[in-house]
Image 1 (cartoon, rainbow over the protein chains, first blue to last red):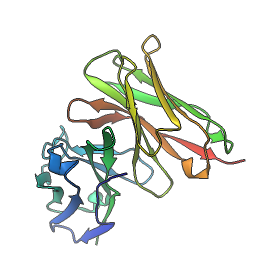
Image 2: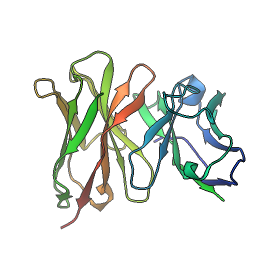
Image 3: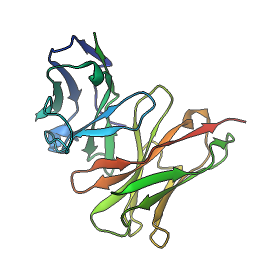
Image 4: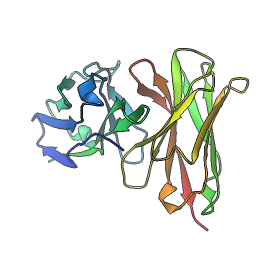
Length: 112
Length: 120
């Protein structure tokens, strides 16, 4: 089953900028399907962070931004804060195998 | 504010059938605006989409689970359900239900999740 590839972990110091990549293929991101991002704290429910490639739901700080190009997408976090330490997942739609939803494997963000 | 709540047994025996229900409050499942989905997360691992259902009963599933999964909807009870057959220990996970925003297909809101353990 096709999926999306994320780095297992990223880290950064408070105040820094970090990016999390999400690599797909021509049947999902490359086909033009939107990418969405979720933030999950340990033991908690995933929270929608970015939808439609680059849109923030109400209440999400503008320190979080999303972008997409070709078969990849990225989540950027600026002005890193200790409270940003969490797992981040990308998600899209894939038109292979009769169509299905795909998630990235998740990225653990550590604030140093 | 729409809320979703999963319910069902927390323990299922190997080779048995896992059955969960997601009850929706603050809105109706009987709408053309959304699909309704199930996602799971094994302990310490990432998110896996299981499948989704429309209010008409139209459903589609993860290719890797398709042979064992059924997702149905009951508009009279305002809930939708998941059935997973022939379970093994690898099906142990937190199971989430969520509303699926159309047409771009993102998940919000989510239920709080329920842990289902497959063990004898």
